[in-house]
Image (cartoon, rainbow, N blue to C red):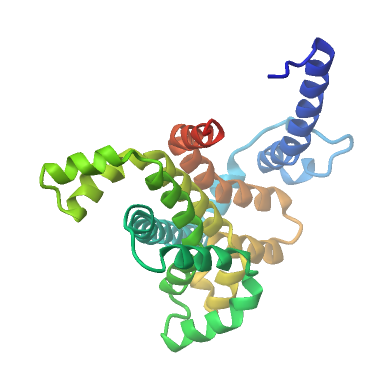
Length: 277
């Protein structure tokens, strides 16, 4: 195993620190702007720490009925997508990993190959199908297609997790008289909490931040999600960047909260994958 020299370690730390600063600088500036008054946004010289920080921007934008509606719409759409996606993916991943049937590998390869198809290529037929089902201007029009589009990402993660479990667990469960359904729920599923959390974080983040599909499927602004609503507010609030920054911070909070709640499972899954073999 190669060990960094003191000079090499210092160089690596310097590069990583510079990258961290570049990545965090826009976020820090966004949060700073959200606490500024309008006159301080374009102050010269720029102020990283507001001279008179105020939370009035958050109170103003949150009291706008549309912001609350968009926020709730995003919570429902993202939560529903995660629940549907992870539930179906867990069942499919378990079947592909633990059951031997004809065409299993072909099915998996065909499913994984859909991940390389760009979304714009399937956007039109997906919209037509959604419209024929009468799901335009409805949150189900976001939940069902988004869960389906991201399905094989979760299937891949969970299939690998189930495949890595020892066969002895399955054999012991069968000896004890466990039916396949009971074995799945009571024996196998609790052992893949980390991959489940990883899938949930990824799907939640992808759904919450999705802009294009909710914009296409929702014609009534009352059904907008927070990402579309943010663009709507940018066009209506124009130069009120302190209010826009406050909306952007509010829109980012759920993703941060979900990650913080599930991060121990996420990093457990990442580290276990890194140490395999």
